[in-house]
Length: 311
Length: 240
Ligand SMILES: Nc1ncnc2c1ncn2[C@@H]1O[C@H](COP(=O)(O)OP(=O)(O)O)[C@@H](O)[C@H]1O
Ligand SMILES: [Mg+2]
Picture 1 (spheres, rainbow over the protein chains, first blue to last red):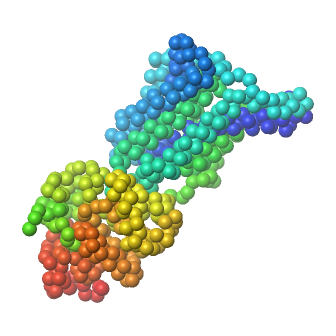
Picture 2: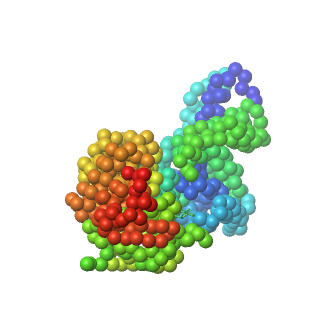
Picture 3: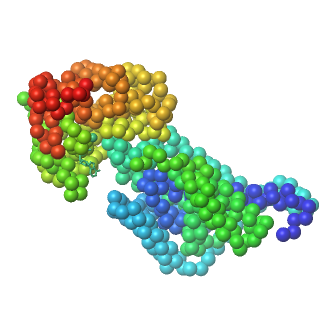
């Protein structure tokens, strides 16, 4: 680390990088927390849906380039929609195949099934896409220089801005859906009392399916941005990102949607600052230590609530 | 008489190996208030929930409006015009009163729901003052009113009420029973009412059934049951 007198500039740069990364974690974390809120299970395959979203984005971008769609904004928008739509189908299918048949059986059954589903998806992608890292050339280069201190330039990339803006937009739409629409109301009702929700004539199974669909689409948006940001993906990215997003959800208070976003931001910032000031090798250790500490001192997370009404 | 609106025929319901209902036969006719009374654990809540398909009966059949509904999923049964204000009220605590009401109407016909909101607020004016308050912050009586109002939002033909007076002050109980009578007389709503408060229930109802250990042991016009010595001994003495 050689940042001499530019302490402030260096920190500001880490803040920008950390927020960008945190947005991606936050989007994935929302999917964990939503599913947990409604059916009380950790969907371990969710990180792999993120990975599949990244692969679908890459496939779409390569395919679009091959058929001559060269306008970058158009190609990006189409790839994003494609990845989100197909990932949503994956989310739907995973719930139907791996979790719904086990509803009402013992508590660990869907958890075990989720781990199995996660391994299946990773192996499936490894077989059809190969195990090697897939690169993508930078599509949105450049940015602006915010400040220059003793030779250290603080850069805000166009891509970073795009990631933050797209995440905020997606989260705004998602928040509107959950708080203002009948579907969102049904989702919140399921979260509070499944049995009562069915007694009101609401199709609980359908509501749960749609929760998986929405969570998967959000994960695909995260996968898309991960691909653009890092420029390389492989079949294993879902594991680490998934565990970190899960950590974010727990840190924010599992079941809480704002908590998931807040947790994602914190994990992104911790990881980035740790890498910048201490050691890159131990950045994951830092993130997971936070999980352990959170579980010990804040078992319900930052914005979580104690389970009082669930008998 | 016409065919009943709701009919249970030889219904037996189990929780695992435990039998909660034994060959229950029960009928509720359109326009009636029918009371179901019985001691704690007799199977009253199980009977209402069996009508709603959770749990399903192991033997026997449930008919509603002339059609068999045994084995249908709960949400399909409820969409046919049955609503329940269940035991323990089950208000959504982290939703506002308004949202609790709107979600009651969500699965049904949106236009019918539109007209239902002013009606239920007129029936329970205390809810109108608290529309933006969270369900979990209401008093017990207000929660019970909300549970009934929520059930009414879908515009049901048959209302199932599970111990609406439980834990409430006598004055609040009276308000709720007055509302039930008004619903029945003014709107022709058919009501199956489960109560441990047997005296009040029998005064409100047209007919009644007595459930003991999952079996119907007595039935008849409510006024007649009210006069029977064995009813007085088992459910009324010391009560009221
Ligand atoms: N979910 C359940 N699982 C197992 N047994 C139950 C369940 N609900 C009720 N029971 C049993 O069924 C019987 C009838 O209960 P219930 O219908 O709640 O009676 P009531 O409403 O008349 O008090 C009781 O013996 C009760 O313990
Ligand atoms: Mg009961």
